[in-house]
Image (cartoon, rainbow, N blue to C red; front, side, top):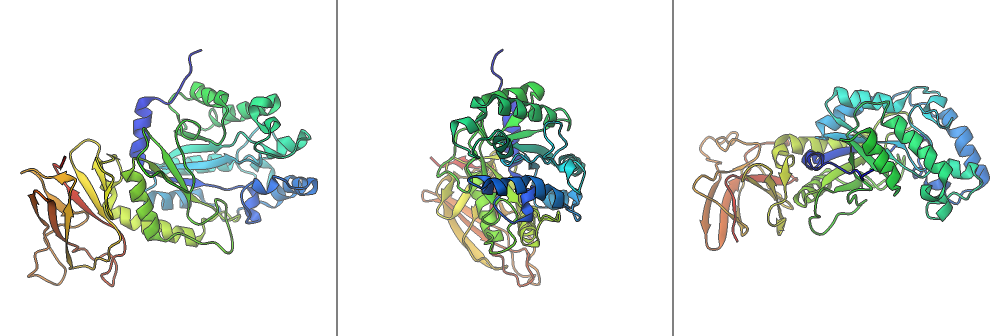
Length: 412
């Protein structure tokens, strides 16, 4: 049989989505530990208690997947990727392959199914994270829990490979059309099985670059996805967490999109089933910025240059509109700023405006014209623009401002 792969039109669709919600959640969220990895090098006693005690006390009584989907949608997230099975081997879905699964907890319901149904109700596409590693199975086999030793790899462990194939088959036949599969391991057989079961699925990790907690210096060829935490840990961390600011997250989104990638931003729900307030408050800052500037982020591609100093660029996929993201600037309402762009040339049809505002009104100052003006000469495109929209009560706005330039051409 010929090898299968991601369909080109599905890769194009994926590149348009821009922003997704990653959800790391499993039974060890009760401990506030790193997800799964505490099992590597652990004593037999630790491993036995991990399996025999944690499922029995996992009771997310505040879990409401519609609440998760609502904040994801508000924050501009077009898709979700949920950890159906992480390296521990605990399955957050109903499975016939192991008793180490969500049905054998006080919750007693298929959490994966609940998440799939809720996010679909809110118009958000669904993807599954799946780890071919299975620490509990390795322990049952009498092997050391490891991710690098040869016997830990499914390609060298027929029982583990068969176990994974059965679980992939369940995940891709019991939940309807799945848009993405984040396969956190290398077995080519699992990718091929996924495409056989769902030809339109987009395999991300395992088929494209998916850097964690870092991004490339330059655009990558084809689709790629940057995976980041809101704080320092993928899983819920109850204390001593250091969260990124909303401004930082917005600037990261801009940089990733300017380089042609998608931003998969992680949340780590509490064992009670809520997304922590410290995380949702940052998602709301992202939501506000995207409510104003969304057209500059979706259905775009990289411009000829990704940035000029602290001004980043994207280009609309189907037109000659370019978006210039002015970052690292304190721009109070009512203040006019001047910029010169070297990479853009305008035409007689071009219009320039700040996204979100009409350019006709400055609140309380009827004698001020806030409309943008511009001039092109041999030194570049000179833009004079005023931020005229009040976003915060104190009239200040610490986040990037987006200038829209229509009918733009490359100046070289």
